[in-house]
Image (cartoon, rainbow over all chains, first blue to last red; front, side, top):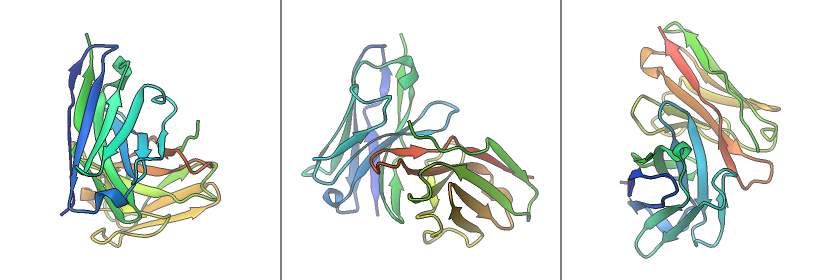
Length: 116
Length: 108
């Protein structure tokens, strides 16, 4: 059974940093591109970033580029999202996701709240 | 930056056909995907690669794409299909992904 479990969310002050993790199981983690998406309260889904199976190729949404860094540890089947210089508008549920055609699974998300 | 445009809301009566559109300049060359999200839950893939249906998704869900518009069709919509629906695709470079703004489907 495929499982994706995010962690690391919480309350953080503006300008602060946070590192999210996503523990994956039930599939060959290193073979798949992995993604992060987010959803602000009451708003739509926003794609954040993706990383290839080897960890050598990354892409970011324009609004996150330079502040967010995606990475992975294939030995530990774990995906990360390092978020720096956080702003109030980064408040959202952050989801990790694996997607390849019909093979598409999401975690339940972790809530990040940026507020003073 | 690249955008996918969806209507904010669609409303149908039970048993009617619901159609949700998604427009984007790169859609003639890039696949569209459709996600269903019910309140408080993670999204679920209902259509991939324009028109393919994952296993476990009811046959009443179908997808099509023509030119710069992709369409999700729910034939004989049921009350349990009430949800937010998002299209998803790639920009023309193939690097960045994007979600549409979402469409709230009401079935009543």
